Picture 1: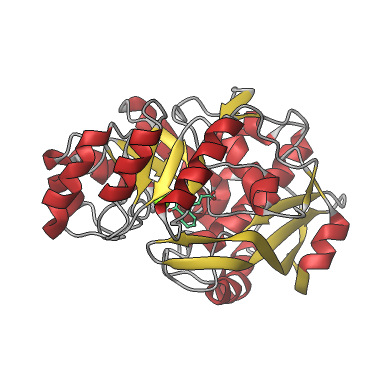
Picture 2: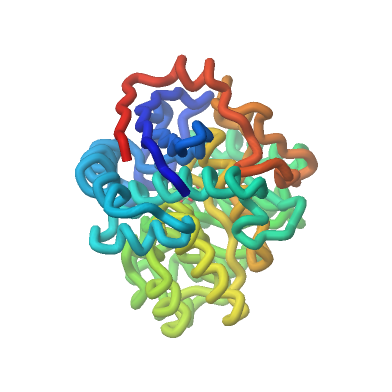
Length: 369
Ligand code: OSB
Ligand code: MG
C-alpha cells in the first residue's frame, strides 16, 4: 500500500431528528472523515465515530484530532505497509483511542481493497451478499410516540426493533410495546444506565421475550454483568464494555454476556473487529454489528464487516435516509424489507458524493506520509 498522503476532514452534519439515549440527546454531529491516498491517486475512506462529548467512551472529536495528527500519522510514516492487517499492530504503542485508530484503519482497508480490485467485504473474508438489519429507536417523549415509531419500523420491514431504555422509561415501556407488537423481534439498550442494585427491577424484563438487553451496567464492567446474567433469562449483549479481543475473551469466559455487539470504532478498526468475530465463531457466540449514527462512509464499513458469517443477528444499520437529508455517499445505503445488498464493486462499494462532502466540510488538513 504505497501511501502518499492522509487528508483529514472535519465534517458537520445535522441529523433529521434528535436521537436520545440514557446518556443524552444528539442531533448535530461533528466527526472526522479520513481519506488515505496512494501514489496512483486512488483514495480510501474512513469515518471516525467519536462524538463531540465523551459520554459513550472517553474519546471526542478533539481527542481524535490530537491523536491522529500527533501520534498515529507519524507511526504510518515509519515504514510502508504491506497489508492493512498491520495497521492495528503499528498503532499498538498508543493506548486505546480506538475510534481514532479505526478511522485511519478503515481508510487504509478501503484503499487496499480498491488496489486489489476487491469489494471490502470479500477482502475481509465475508461472503454474504445480503445482510439483515434492524433499527435502533431512541428514547421518546411519551410511549404513544414510541409506539408510532415502532409501528413504522415494522411496516418498513426492519428485522428487529431496538428500544433505548433508562430508569423510568423501561419496564413500563417494553410492556406496552410488547402488548402492541406481540411477535416482533424486540430488544432493549440501556447504555449503562443501571447497577446491580436494580437487579430485581431488571428481572421484570424477562417477561417480555426480548432477544437481548444491551449494556445494562457500567460502561467498562464485565464482572457485575456476569452476576446479572446469572440472574436473568434474557441474554445480555455487551456493547460499551468490549474494546479488544481480550475483552471479548474475558467476557465470554466469565459468562458476562451471551451476545456481543461489535463496533469497528470501539475496538480500533476492522482487523480487530474481524479477530473478535473469528474468536466468537469458535465459541458459538453470536455477534452483530452496532451503529454509531454514522454517515455513509461509516455505514459502508459496517455493511462490509457484517458480511462475515458470525454476524448472525441483525445489525443497527438503518439506511442513509433514516438519519440524513443528504448523505455523503452515492448510491445511498438502501434498506429494502430489512435487507441491505452488500456492494460488489471494489472497496467500500459506495462512491463519495464530493459535492455533499465539501458542503459539510468545516476544515481540512493534508499530511504527507
Ligand atoms: O449504544 O448502540 C448504541 C447510537 C449512538 C451511540 C451508541 C449507540 C447508538 C445506537 C444507534 O443505538 C445505532 C445507529 O443507528 O447507528
Ligand atoms: Mg449500545
